[in-house]
Amino acid sequence: MIAGIIAIILALLMIITLVLPAMAAENTNSGGQAGADTLNAVAVSSYSAENFAEAESVASTSSSKSQHVSSGGSGKKYGIYIDNINVTDMTRSQMKKAVEARMEDLSDDVIVLYAGDNQVRTTAGALGLTYTNKDVIDEALSIGKKGNIFKRFLADRQLEGSGPIVLDLTFSVSRSDVSTVLAKNADALNCNPQSNGVVLNDDNTFTLTPGKTGVALNNKASVNRIMDYFSGEWHGGEGGITLVYSTTEYADNSAELSKITDLLGSATTGYQTGDTNHDTNVRLAAEHINGTVLYPGEEFSAEKIIGPTTKEYGFLPGDTYENGKVVESYGGGVCQTTSTLYDAVLAAELKVTERHNHSYLVSYVEPGLDASISEGLMDFCFENNTSAPIYIQAVTKNGYLTFNIYGEESRDSDRTISFESKTLNTTEVETTYETDSSKPYGSITVSGGIQGVEAELYKEIYINGQFDSEELVNRSSYAMMPLTYTIGTENADSQTLQAIQAAIATGDLSTIQTAVGNGSIVETSVMEN
Image (cartoon, rainbow, N blue to C red; front, side):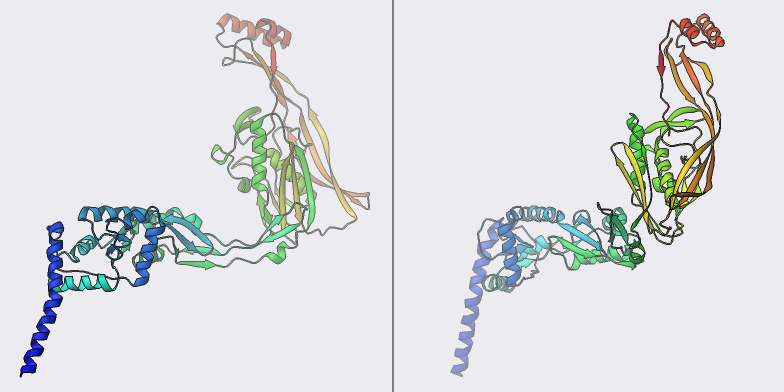
């Protein structure tokens, strides 16, 4: 009986010993935070010692984020944390600002999206980063501030014996923002399969380049994966997400490409004219063609390979032939590129499937060796009629354009070819005179003056250096372009115009010059397209 009473007394003394310190802590803390929170429950999530050490490491090494971790000023080793922010002595408004600053920092973290070998870099902020547990500040305030004595006693015991109490920020991203990022980067993340390629080295040898597997992104599943990653895996810092996609294997053409070893044909023309726009267009068109590979049976289309010769694609205005005159249009000069390529194709004896001569003669090649193109109207096309792939190289250097066509040589070594342009008949240049009221009065400009020609181009075949035979390659007809004198009549009165027309009727240039006050003649060069 006495022993039982003694046991009860000892138990009561132990409870009093445990409860009184907790009541004292409540009295101490109630003054500064009274009214700061109205919760009765305490929601506590504690990190392991490793997590706390990581938070402390972030605090000591990150110049921008350490400000938020050390806020509170208590210098306590243990306390209450939201993510890596020590909020032990903060008010509600201080906690809110600290969390907002933390989210701004996290928004700059890089996130790499992977789809096969393709990848893009974005940021957590671009994906619409936010946190979903908006009551985390209330939870932090409730610990040790409100609630019943027993719950506060547990919180104090945890702080003293097990390290800090860390409340997680639970992250999420915006589905619409994620979809927008994937849409903007669709070209970088998706790709068609690309077979092996070749690179021409400086010593005229070739190196094979690897193929590329095709990738097709599953947008809906990839959005879900990104959402899941942020809500379940990500805790800040640079992240990486492998998206959901399907693949298509590329065709391995390395055996065929390894056959490209020999120079089959070459041609060179001088393209510098003094007209910067013309020269730029020649070089740009050549760059588009350079590196083209054609497999046996494939057809080359200059219009498709070069693409639109417009301002948007970097081409400049240049002189071209149109309706019997020289006019300015975007892409002037591109025809010299296709003409030079045509000559290399002839030398390689590839099969020409479409070719058009110019309306008028050009000076950079002989009649029959030109190839004109006009978007939507005329193209230059040829077929790889050999048994191996061919590689087209374009070189612009020191004002000269050269095309080299490489492949596998299968022609007899004792057989050589050359080309001869034969003129059938010519049309002599006529002289014409016209007036132009938009040009200054008294000015005289001259343009044109191109002889008309009908010609045939032949391929001559030699065996062991001896002429063997010839083959007709094409027939070309070039119109005559008159030598035209244009007299400026701007602001001229009717009487003066009549005098000028009378002078023109004589067909005598000196008489015309006298009629306009000895106007000086300015020659306008004809720029072939």
